[in-house]
Length: 244
Image (cartoon, rainbow, N blue to C red; front, side, top):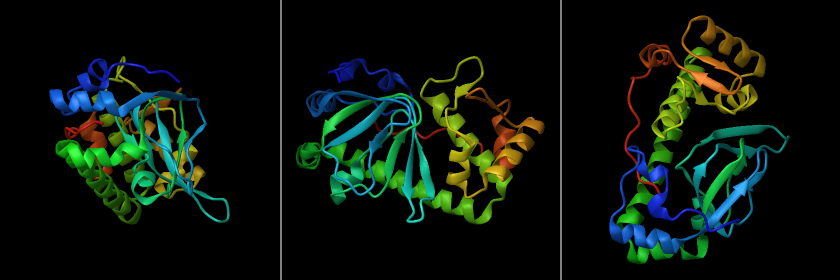
């Protein structure tokens, strides 16, 4: 653990994806942030059913949110990317309703959960940002349900790859035409309601059609319009969003 970067020098805040902070908001975030915490690949960040004393913003790295069924099967709810705020469930509901696992090494800006109410008491714009973040999660859940209920395997995987490509490109991770993709095909299978065999065959189909190339932990998308068309969605840029 370490104190880490000053919020004013945060590399994520320099990205056009995120809404700039006012001077007062920046001063508050400097007080609100405790330290930076590192989690290694496959390490549990938050545990389903447990209380967490901390809230986090992902500074770097990626992870998965998941729930564990009684028979041991896992359902991946969604993926965690740089700029995401995690732990809010524990902050508002007393305990986590899902787990968060580091898929790659992660560095998290760490905040004291006990001070969460200060945001609502004295930082109206920051409180609105938290509400916006919760609304985006609700929207994503609806989009995911529509995907699982109405899209076939090819559309599901194209949709997921397009969303990931757009998000990682927007946070500055595009290098030489590719973005990092540390997730396993099993993670995609569990997120999209597919068998591992079906996922593997569909990834091969996507590669054969030239829609995307996923190999050696990197994802390349030659034409986002074609990938969006295959997914049955609009080819849209990431919407500007707040960051805590």
